[in-house]
Image (cartoon, rainbow, N blue to C red; front, side, top):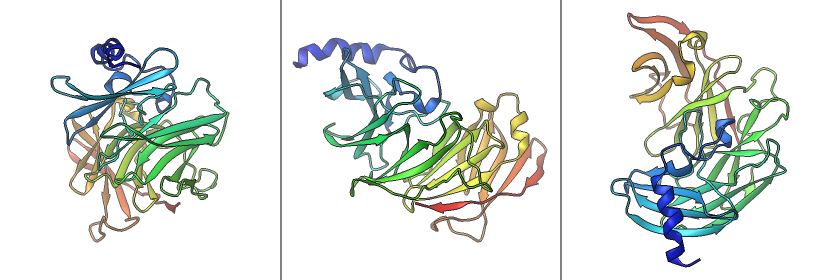
Length: 303
């Protein structure tokens, strides 16, 4: 495709309002559309948008000013993945060297799920990952060597899943799930509401709601392990549970409801965050201070 023919679709991409391309349905099946994902180090936005019926324009453009640095046209339909109900975008490694795109699912039960790994600077294709069944993007290790995916394990229950690791260097899926929902004493159910990533990209924290109880899934993208942190049931009775946010405040992951801290998950003061799975404590906080402490089910699984 000649550069001149890219101007119209690219201009439309940059002028569309945020969220215009986001479809209905589970958030992990949605693409980020014209919002794309932000490379905060460079101040750029990485966008994937349809170009006709069978191609995708991928662009790197300035957030401020909109200057387009680079564009490529890919065969097929691809999008920047969304990782949580609030529209949080993913796909960019913390070192900003890799960008993962997803193939939008055309049905609720696709036979094959596909992901495309690009070099985030020049937008060249590095690798294609194809897996049988329904899979969704979850996270990347800081150096982009490990891709984390959500595997749907039940056709009848969309909120039942397993987190799996795919070694992009070895081109293989690790056989052992990082989170195995088939364990009767440790069910993993719910929908990703919001997410926050620690500086450096190693720890990824996702708030899950809609299951038996709210919890934070803390994924160590370097050690290929995770911790499930149960949160107080009181969070289910907030006025707008799907409007909750996560923030990192020192050694705590804070759950925020309309600028007020309503719960925290904290590392034990005698444990270092450098380990593979530090113990955590969860508590619910009110305007007058600590109201109640909750026992935490701590689960560490390695892939």
